[in-house]
Image 1 (cartoon, rainbow, N blue to C red):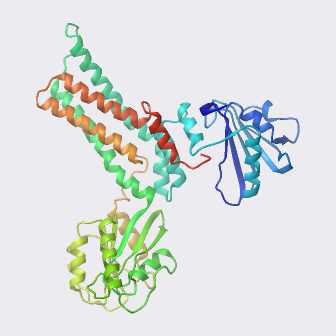
Image 2 (cartoon, rainbow, N blue to C red):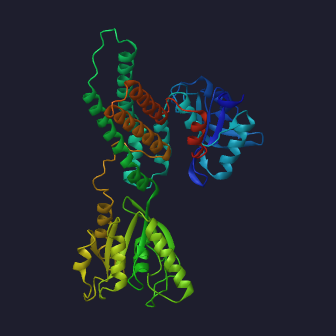
Image 3 (spheres, rainbow, N blue to C red):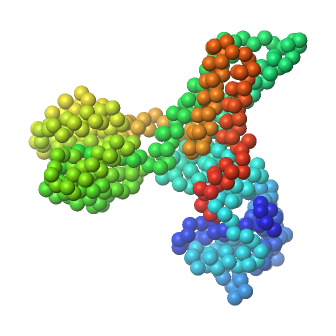
Length: 457
């Protein structure tokens, strides 16, 4: 068999040693192929049991027994893919799993491609496209909020939000078309002001979704965070505190950090992609000068800036320049060395930066306050994880196109253009939303979506 009708197989657990490993088989011959490599203990066989049933036995190949195993049988369409599915679970050694997979392929299955199981679930109507995309977000979630948001999308929250707008647009478009095409019929008159107001309400709804994209991206990918400050204020000590281990060299000599030191850390349910940068100052050292340029570049691209200041030192020109550069950015002013005698003009910093935290990076005092300040800066404390949220560039692009088309429809109404023009704009908006949900999507788009999945899911 070839194409979508082939029976496919892949290892569905991580490619690392573990207590348990799973090889998944899906397709029209899943039961027969699984039976060729599985010998049950007892009279029940893979081909004569009901769906949602587990059977204990052994898996084998031409060379003999491979391992003990449990076969879980799912009959289509009541399975993940909508097809017959068998999952063979054995001990999670890589050799065992690879040998078992090879036996299954020798028995007639084809290797599954990236995301092919979930792709079949989509094509068989088990999942919408936004729900399928949420599967990978669930797998890759690195924190509580990210996982809750992905689960809400998998449960259909985003689809329902988009579907509500799409359905109303279709109704309005149908009313407009009927009004245009059948003027002699007794069709309810269109109130232009009411139509414009309703379209503006849809604008607001879609704009909220667009605004959610950047927050969702931070939750999924981690927060790109730059630790910035003049030399010797404790940036590297702060980096090591957040990382929980020594990542940056710490000395009393200014300019020790010459390059950008990076690490990804988890603080509660926050994931920060940290960059400890060279101290920003004027220098004649060519190596340090390059480090300062890298620090300034990282400052411009960061989603969050931790501006570090020395509580035991007076405010310098470099400090003031840093304050000016980050005062309009998502930033926390970190006043380090809080355990030492205060010389810093903290009031000046407070006048320019809203979120300020006093810490001692060497002792860890103030760390919890810093985490809370980061959540406040990024508005994560007020995030509703159960709300609809865009999670991919594809979804963002579709929403942007729909929003633009609705805006053009409103402009057409405002400028007195014919209802034909308005109807065309509404059709474009509907088309973009149908592409978002996967109800009207090309094979190229589908292949692109699932190409980013891991093999085995």
